[in-house]
Amino acid sequence: MNWGELKTQIQDYMETTFSIDSLTTFVTQAEERIYNAVQFPSLRRNVTGACSQNNRYLQAPDDFLAPYSMAVIDQDGSYHYLLIKDVNFIREAFPIPTGAGNTGRPYCYALFGPDYPNAPEKLAFMLGPTPDLGYGIELHYFYYPTSISYGNIDATTTWLSNNFDTVLLYGALIEAAQFNKAEQDVMANINNKYRETLTLAKRLGDGMERQDQYRKGQVQDQVV
Image 1: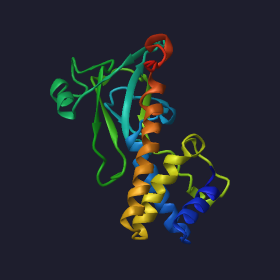
Image 2: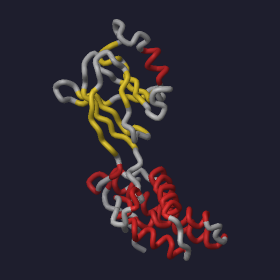
Image 3: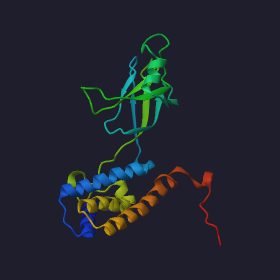
Image 4: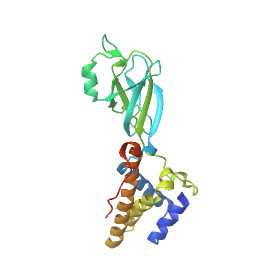
């Protein structure tokens, strides 16, 4: 389902013509709800970069929301995955950032707050110990993909609209129905359909994509 088809479906279901701004709001709110309810491995983002020698801070990507993993890449190409800790742990363990015994290959990291007032919307990471070399970094993280509504281009599709358009449609219909102050029975029907489709989405994202038949075997129903 593309953006043009989604707009048409929402308005046909609700028997109402909405502005583009309203349709965009319905869909973006639905997308955020879905992405926070189901962690699709297909929608993880991976970036590589580098930390600087004697600098314990590392800038987070602009679209970063939460980490899945962070690894330090040694000069020989070997990966060393870091443990996530609190900022106070790193400060306590390595009180003098570049002092003796406080530098080396990092083995832990923490989410560090935004840089006020210079960059209040950007997060950073704190590494411990402080890097003694310019190591490579690989980060896997949770983010919100670009919305299908971005730019209001009818032909636009996304991974979600191509693979689970039903959960996107019913998620947007919930927002549209609330906006329209729909009757309780209408709201109940839409909510029920949304929960049904979300259950199927979770089966894929939180179930099937996290296992295989080699380790888990095939799903079997008891024969009566």
